[in-house]
Image 1 (cartoon, rainbow, N blue to C red):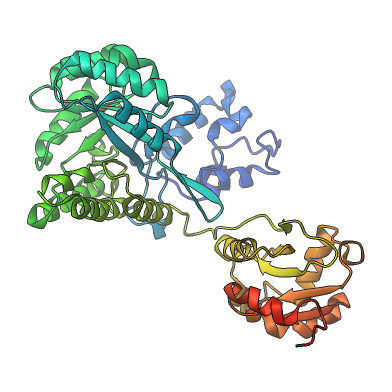
Image 2 (tube, one colour):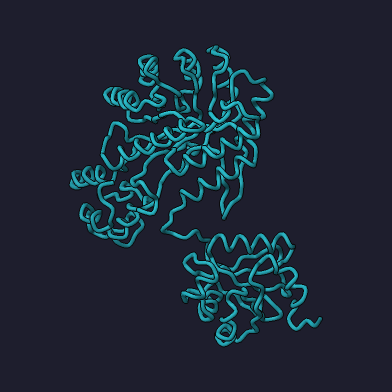
Amino acid sequence: MKINSPLEVYKYLPQTNCGDCGEATCMAFGSHVIDRSLKLEDCTPLLEDKYKKKYLELSELMAPEIREVTIGVGEYAVTVGGDDVMYRHQLTFFDQPGFALDVWDTMPEAELVERVTFIRDFKKFYVGRFLKLDMIAVRSTSGDPGKFRDAVSKVMENTELPLILCSLDPEVLKAGLEVAAERRPLLYAATKDNWQAVADLVLEYDVPTVLFAPDDLDTLKSLASTFLEMGRQDLILDPGTNPQGNMLRESFENFLKLRRAGIKEGQREVAFPLMSVPMTAYLTGGDAVSSSYWETVLATVFSVRYGDIMILHSIEPFALLPEMHIRDTIYTDPRTPVKVDSKVYEVGSPGKDSPVIVTTNFALTYYTVESDLASSGIDCYLLAADTDGLGVEAAVAGGQLTGQKINDEFKKVDFDFSEKTGHNTIILPGLGARLQGDLEDATGLNVLVGPQDSGQIPPWMEKNWPPGKKE
């Protein structure tokens, strides 16, 4: 991205503040274009002929330094790449790495279907959303085009997830494309030995492809230049993933060199998403648990630096969960706290005798409190006060959470204590204890101070609820 401020974007916009994009002003639209929550095409006047030159110029200036590549079609499509910076604190990282789990064409059909179903249905609820797997890599271990075609067909019967077709034999890849081309699969891979035959397939079927040159950046760059000359932009580069020792260090350094060349040095022929293959951990000869562990290490390393798409093997929770959590952490925008909607939530089936508890709308705080309440069977009303996504302690210290603010939050959602409850009592989190007097003055209600840790709410309730309870 050549420009990174709303004011710079604004210079290219119609500057009419028409509101067609859904924003009140063109400047506001520009800020959303910068953070990619809106696209240039959302400004319909900009697409008119009289603004066409500005639109084309702005499109070029707004293009990410690392090209975006889309695999698959429809709602299941996965887009990778698209980064503009080397370090996420400079802006943020976009398009989190696509995780593909493998199947292979020599698996018994029942096992194949079972594994595909697991990959398709796997999800983990985490801070307000579900973490999921993205793709399936179909590997040819038989070398038989017919078996590969049958395996790809069986996978397609059981999932809509995007596919990676894995073989270095163009005839095998062609067999897979004959049944899967409409899904826009990713081909893995073109090498210095098979590039011409793979290029013919790519041109015929119009699909993205991986260029693979292990530990040889010059050859990788040459392959990319060749495919660019053919007009192909949807390329992914695989410089090799060595699993251990000095060779792992070399792989890590190759990823750094490629990303630096694409972003810092402007070498457009290597400014593509990068593929890592952590499943090479299984080549080390260790037992299954050790290999799975080491695969997790590799996935973590290359999620941080700078794997845009990965092929994994282990489906064990102890491998998948840390891989998915670190990916989510690295690709969460550091400029914007993760938060939930500010409102009063009902936990369980609250009634007039149920407590009213206050927390903040920082997602991690809210879901921790909500989980502790729900798992303990405590029916209650839970206010997630708008603190701009700050936790309780920081919000109290910074003035984002005050007695008056809590009162205003209840009024904003029309929460009538006399109608909803028979006790007119609010429970503050322990870290907000100093707000007790202010909240009583602001609301005229009885205010209790709960524990600092929401995990201690159940024993606190036994001692202090209902209000006025005596031991």
